[in-house]
Length: 207
Length: 210
Image 1 (cartoon, chains in turn brown, green):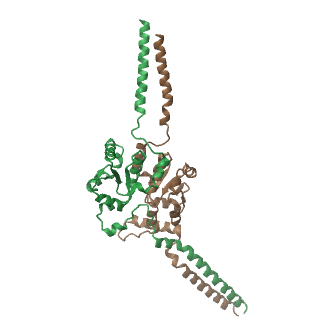
Image 2 (cartoon, one colour; image 1 turned 180 degrees about the vertical axis):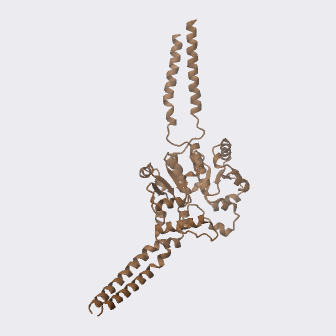
């Protein structure tokens, strides 16, 4: 009987030690592949270019635009207010510090939405929260906001309002490009009108 | 008799305990799919151009009848039924880790073939490709174009306009110059204003000298 008890106690202790060693494999902070795939299937991570533009115009302080393209492409053109963190350095400490700010919405963007989505997937795997992807990327932003296309006469009111919003946003960021030809002319006009006033003063002050 | 009962009860309890732990071990230790690449290794994949197929390369592969390439359509079944690449397999994104899909991938690997994932756009194939790569599939490549470039229903001239990589910047230089111009023009305006101010002062003083 004693031997039996000893044997049973030995088995129990061995199992207890085994349990101690087991959970290490499962306490990874990473999101498991099947969950990550479900997150990829969820389109709510995509933010539209109009939505981002609205938040930029209103100077939303919780918005962080992260351009993951190489520096050359970033300098050629990027969305006003974006910061450049090339995707190669995505896992480096400075980038991760930026991405770990919990009060900000971090929106990845690239020329299209392929590289930005890749950055999103890797960050999501590491468990980062409040990360998003700009749908269509810089190309779409440029082609809808800067090159806003006026809708046809027969288009619904919403289309016209959207066009006006985009035009206003473009002027907000870059000044009015169509007025670019005129400032010289308006300056000349100003010079002419001022000269007239001076001559008027002359006659008034003349004896 | 009493001692026998105690032993029996003890044995039963311990056996039950062991059974519970064994069942726990079995159910806990096998997640169906596991990562085989770390995040850093996954990041390194993104630079590798050997892991993607451009539209030009894809057309060449489609015409090659040696059967070394299998095209995998990640769109939903409705789109697949409407039209798909000849001999393509349909594995919608949701079913990527289903057992049916896993056996399809295993067959492709056994036959030494290469799988090329394509979707309506590169964006659609991107997630599945990265997930498959991270979970250990080594013969999976991503198509960098849109399905229109594989279907080839458009005129060749229109097809040529579509880029080889979705991630090519498409910023029209003329439009870009327009939005960069106002800064330059406004400094000219300031200069002309300054020029007109000087003659004003002169006329003012001449008016007062009368």
